[in-house]
Amino acid sequence: MINPDDVKLRLSCLGYTATDEDNDCIDLCINETEEYICCFCNIEAVPFELYNTAADMCCGSFLKLKSSIGELDGYEPGGALESITEGDISLSYTGTISRDVLFDELLNRLMNKDEILIGFRRLKW
Image 1: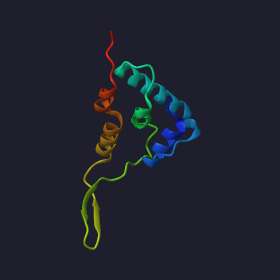
Image 2 (image 1 turned 90 degrees about the vertical axis):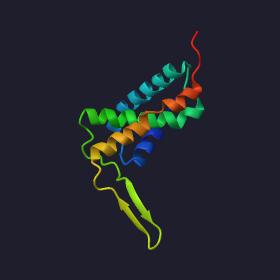
Image 3 (image 1 turned 90 degrees about the horizontal axis):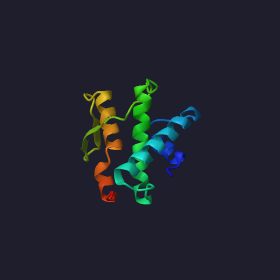
Image 4 (image 1 turned 45 degrees about the vertical axis):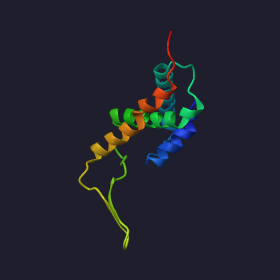
């Protein structure tokens, strides 16, 4: 089973601070993710090797759920790095990419893990 504290830690790395009010929603997303993985792979429980993948999928599910019910107004995904210059150190971030595009890309990277899950699929007789 995925530990809710690990999901909260991953969310904090993504810039979202989970509160006590988020606990039920996180638990729901954990159950949903574990059910998806077990059904997709035809297995009884999420293997240890998929733990981090499952935690990422939980975070994506959580952020998508919070966004869909309008409770994610203050969340800003970090800007995408556009270029790096090594001599005299120069970093530049994209200012032209909208928040919605960055958020959609973040959700896509967190939730679409089927190519990883395929390696754990079992035949169903």
